[in-house]
Length: 332
Image (cartoon, rainbow, N blue to C red):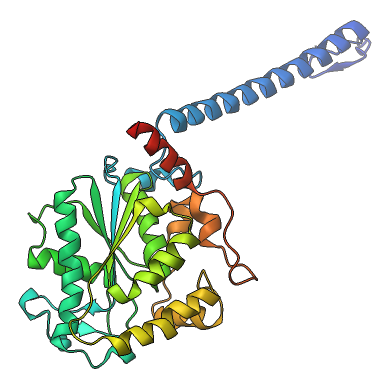
């Protein structure tokens, strides 16, 4: 006779029917899942803590939460001892290689309205460059920023880069290894010359300047002092404008500056509406987009400021207000 079948046997094992053992198994299974979840959360929390500690003790050069660590690793050491920004606004693009030919019109790319340039006018561009270099040599805490974008269709470089290249080729700095000069390659007008140069200074040094000197045309002095500086709320006591004009009668040029520069900015303080905005678009032949929204997140609100009321002053937070106060405290 065959043995009676074993009830509940499966694959040679007896299935337990004890409610205690069944409940215990369920609890143990849930405990294992809970433990795994806890371990996972602990791992994530530990990783987050390590990343935050790294950012706290080794902050990025630009204080930007969106900056790529691999990108930051490719940047040179910051020149964090510099305090004085010297801005040279560009007016054309030098195409040459021989600095001795810098007064030749064929060596430059101009706006259409600048087509009739003579050697005396071109020499003023170089005087701006050379004067800024002399200030920089005397002040070891200064950085020269040659500012201006790719404003000419016939050129593949920028005003700022070409000014810097001319400065180095002409030997206006004491050595070829002079490191306290750079270019700002995106500005399309005088307001951007000032604001973008401040942003560029921060890229090079990791902080904002405590003093600004602009070297440009004398006829543009009022535009910078009365309009651009107040628009960014830069302290008047820490702003200087040095004007160098073309020799001779400049009455026509001064009238043109008033009608096409000063008065339009009076009506449009940030240059982002109608007439001035159109000038920027016409000069941006290569569709360049400035990087300062990323590299200077503390300036993002000002960089994007374009009020419906064309003359409404920006009232948001500005980094140099705090840095100016810190600098005054250090002087005491």
